[in-house]
Image (cartoon, rainbow, N blue to C red; front, side, top):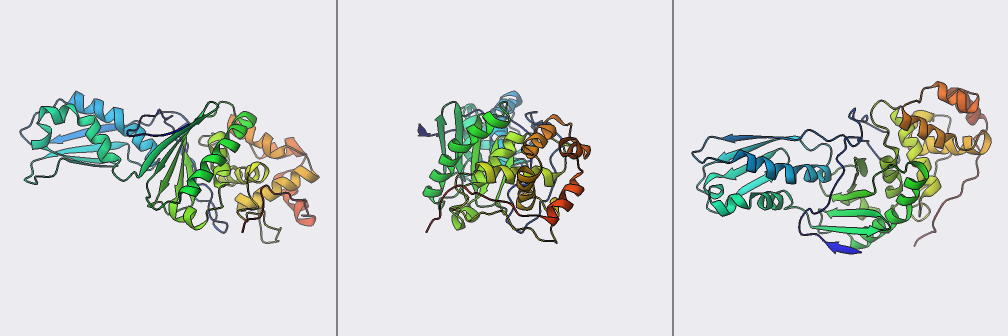
Length: 345
């Protein structure tokens, strides 16, 4: 079922687990996970600066802020300021009521002193924050909910359809297979201002509309990013190359159309390292699966989630250190690879 939402009428799980995800093929991972545990609420706060003669019911303003801003910030991203300053100003601008952006609200004192405007402040604030949202749609299937926020009027609707279908095809499988405690309520956001490819934080996945419009078949970004939600490692669980390598390994194993997007695991080169992350590390995992011991990547995922992973984990699982395994891989790197999907025109 799909329906248009006129307000942000959905519940979101506030979380601070943030990863730098799905970089372009030649890009190495940057950034580290946040240290706050997954699903721990961010401490949102508002400071009201009012140098006008208008007296405000600050409790009413704070209640409106708490009702609107946390959900907006979750959709907007983990970089959104958690501390907001609201300035009440005197202005002669006849058409100005209020403006709202991440971290700052500006309110016309003459407008807000009107009882009707003040009573409706929460809705007005929400509309101001959402002014650049082109559409908000929600889809529910079999106990899972996906809210799709599109900030680009030029975003190809066919891509949106493919992303939604990919989500409901692969995400429930990842949750039931790897971590059944993972959220069933996910937010997709397409953003013209985002300069990367895609990233996941909390229960939200952000897509670059520029990238997606240029690469409409790369729908298994959903698989990679969706698995980051499933991973839910939190800070200090392990190295980022391992997190990203496992996510691309899962994309290889569970992706819905890697052939259609021309996504492949790169052939071994002597210049590579297992710390190159992403597809290089994913191919290493597939080699381990075929020639050393099946299920090592899956077990590492469990250890990382439980915060029991150490470098000694490799030897405990395979009898060799990761460096010894890589040395063996370099001597005989051949693997048989099978990809999901089909060739597209």
